[in-house]
Structures are given as structure tokens and as C-alpha cells.
Amino acid sequence: MNIALRLTATAEQSPDAVAVVAAAGRDSLDRAAYSHVTFRQLDRESDLLARGLRERGVGPGTRLVLMVRFGIEFVALVFAAFKAGAVIVLIDPGMGLPSLLDCLEDVEPEGFLALPLVHVVRIANRRRFRRARLNLTVGRRWFWGGPTYRELARARWEPFETVAAKATDPAAVIFTSGSTGPAKGVIYEHGMFNAQVDLIRDRFGIQPGGVDLSGFPLFGLFNAAMGTTTVVPQMNPSKPAKANPARIIEAIEDHTVTQSFGSPALWQRVVTYCEEHQLRLRSLRRAFSAGAPVPVSLLERLTDLLDAEPKSDEAPRQLPAVVRLPETTRNCSCAEVYTPYGATEALPVASISSREVLDDTAERTRTGAGTCVGRAFPGVTIKIIEITHGPIATLSMARELPAGQIGEIIVQGPSVTRSYLRKPLAEAEAKIADPHEDHDATAPVPFWHRMGDVGYLDHQGRLWYCGRKSHIVTTAKGLLFTEPCEAIFNEHPRVARSALVGVIRKPGQAADQTPVIIVEPRSKQFPLRNADRQKFAAELRDLAAANPLTLDIHTVLFHRSLPVDFRHNSKINRERLSLWAANALHGQP
Image 1 (spheres, rainbow, N blue to C red):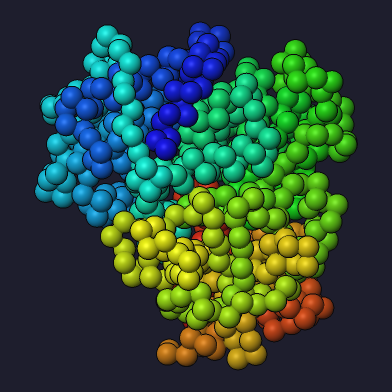
Image 2: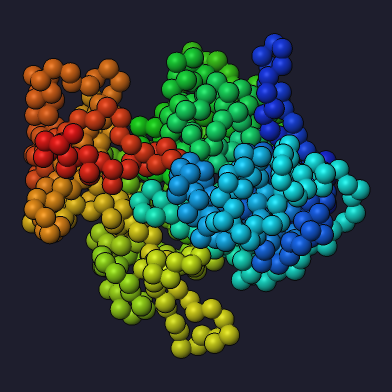
């Protein structure tokens, strides 16, 4: 079950196919330069790295932190660690150094596969990482020991025997973003990774030979396991909202990219650039967006950029990937945008296509029904239970809700993770045991994962997302859910987006909050004068009064730029906004 065997199998089947293409700067004429490896080269390079790691003491269960820029070295090191039986630790540096160090200390890593600057920080904090003795440097090694990537990769190649792994053996610890609470290390098993690859491949019909531009490193690893070429663009994956759209489009054109994943923030930049320059993404057959609810307007605009169905599978490779057109009218084609739903602990859960959204669910979303995230992946089961705070020991203690009723979302499936690293309290909060009478006592107890989200299933079995459970605003008249309420205000032509938060009226009375809608106006639409501010706010209150969902929302605040998560730059940080709103209402700075 070792997930690394997927790479070896692809290298045997398609040895000369390109595995990873990475941006490598610009030439004298400002043309993009690229480095690339084939699947055979990638497999052999990971063999060399795995052998070097094994000879230096890395073995099954060794925890190694990987902090390398997304690219060829990143992918090769991950598969090398899997081959050696190590447990790779992936953490987003965007969370900030203090949080990063706390998370890494909790892991107690036995080594770092990292850039020189990371090793400098490691040594400066050596008391926190006493066990980190198995270290490798990607780049120039300075005053510390251990091999460099180059030293191991330039050795004489011999086949490496990948460590055998059971489905339940740990493969990685991947940290959550911490955007709605403390970051937690999620333990991934080899069987879970294999299930993820199968679910994604089969649901979207991904075949070997495709070309994927990945705006998120994890999807680059899926590609290597599916025989798909990964194109690494010139961007910081931790800051998609600041990516240069021209560079993204250039990479699509240079490599005739057929599919691409990006957060809503990344696609927003690409779509806007394409519209301004009258471009269409002709080669793309699939575009994926996740990390936060994708606005209907963005889905509409992105779908417009995808060109008509090619006459054959080879046709896109014979045409320019980006073409200049006089208009961007939506057409009927097989090209599609998908918005998969999931979380670090459970990925993937459900998905829906943009055409189903635009043809069926968009109008309901605009009027406050929530965001439809589609049907469950095969083998994944979704239930809606009554909203409960605190642990639920077994499923028999939860009350399942009927279709159409908003509750807490729980899921079960082969790719759903079962535990956190050294977080027993968080684990008790997030997992619900589901023992069966015929359960094999030697196997792990079946369980459900609590997504931390609220929503409902419609009568067609589709899941509708209504927000995070921790973001519910509790008033004396009942509960207000963020997604349905915000959609009402987002219909105002001057509103870019909005956020619903609750401000506690009196200390100790968390169940009686004042609902506050915080609005980020569109570009050049921020009300500077008091009269304009009052008029804008009055229009928003009129919208609220016309819908029973928002009838009790009277307080309106304006914010120039709503804070977002560091991983996808799309998920609104309502925790920070709640404090900001409380200070604003109480007259504090």
C-alpha cells in the first residue's frame, strides 16, 4: 500500500513522459525558463534520495519536516521519504514564525529536509528540536552537518526497494491552516493517500498524459501518482491573491495545460486579467477551485473563459493554449469548472460542476439557500446531525436531521483521516465512533469526522454549505448562519463581499449577540463621506428587511479589505473581524 509505488508504476508505464515542469527564472529576453524531469528521472532521483536517507538512519516512522519550495525537489523528496518509510511533515510557513515553531516543536521531528534559511532557524532554536539529527539541505550547506540534496542525487543509481507499508501505516502529518482555531497536525495513512488518488482520478476522469498547473502543492503530489504532468508556475503558493496572472497564463500557454487547481483568490486574478486583455483559456478542459466557497459570479466568469470541446484528445496540443477573442460568450462544451468540498482531515468529500451551479443552484444561493457543494464522492457518506457543542462519543448519541434542515456536517469514507498528532482533546471533539455488532476487533473502530461546518442535504442528496459552526451568530430570536445571510447583502451592486459576525451584548451572555454585517465595498466604491456612508448602510438595511433570513440584522460596518486565511487567501477571518466589530461598536481603536 506504500503510496510511493504509484510513482514507480507510472515510471514503468510512461518513462519518458514529463512528470514535473518548474519555472526557473527568465532569460535575457524575459522569456520564461523551465526545468523539467520525466517520470523515470523523478522515480530514480527519489530512489537516490531514499537510499541516502536510509544510509543515514532514516527508517519506518522517522518524522522528517519538509520545508522546500514547491518544485521538482519538493516532489522528489516527498516520494523519497515515502519509499524510505518515513513520515513527512508538511506545514505552511504562512502561519507565521511563532505558530510555526510551536507546531514543529509539538511534532518532535527527527530531521529537516529544508532550505538553508530553515536550518538557520532550526539551529537558533536547537533546544526545541533536540531530536532533529537527520538533516538534509536543499541548496548550499553553511555551518551545519548533514548531506545536501545535490550530493545524494548525484550518486550512482541502483534500484531502491521501497519499504512495504500497510494501509494504516502513517505516511505524513499535514497541518491544518489554523484559520478557525489552533493549527493541528493531521495524520495521513498510506491507505488514505491511495484512496484520495482513486477518488479524484475516477470522479473527474483524469487520465495519464494530462498537464496540470498546480496552484497548491498537495495537488502536485496527486498528479505524480496519477501520471499527470505537474506545471509549477512562478508564484508563491502561500500568497495566491498576490500571484501575477500574466505568469500563470504564460505557463498555461507554454505547456498547453489541460487542467488547473487554484483558490478563488487566484482564479479571481486570472479571470480579471483575461477579461481585461480579451483572452480565453482555450486548452483547459478542467479547472478546480476550493479552499473557500466560490462566488457564483466567479464561476460564471471562469466558465466563460473555457473554450469549446476539441475534436480529439490531441487537438488542444496543436492549438495555442491562450487565444485572443473579440468576446467571451459562454458556450456548451465538455470543458468544466469544479468546486470540490473537503478539509485537511477529509478530502475529498463532495463536488459540483459550474454548469450544474449556473443552471440549477445559483439563484437559490443568491436568495439565501447557502452554497451547493454537490454530491458525495463514491464511497463517501454524508450525514447531517443536530448542532452539538462538545464531544459526541458514539453515533447513537447524535440525532440525524431530515433533508432540508440545517445541522452539523459529518462524513465517513476511505480518505477520511482518523486522528491528530498529540491532540487528544481535539480528536475527541472531531471524531464520532460508530461501532457495529459485526466489527472485526482487530481493525480500527469505524468513525465519522465532524467537519466543523453546518449545512443540509437537499432531496436530491446534494450537500449545501451554510458556514462554519464556530461562526454561527446566536441571538435571542435564534441562529444566523453566515453563508445564507451574507448572500443577501452581496447582491448589492456596490458590495464586493461581506461577513456576518456576532458581538456579545453583555459579558457572560454569549447566547445573546448583536448580529453585525461587515461590508467590503467594490473597488472605488468605499463611502468616504458620512452622507454616502449613511445612504449605503440604509440600502443594505432595506435589503436585510426584505428577507426573513436577515430581518434582524440592523448594524452595518464598512471595511476596506476583509482579512483572509494565509493558505488560500479566500476564507474570511471572522474571528479577527468579530474583535474589530466589537471595538468599533464600543468606540475603541
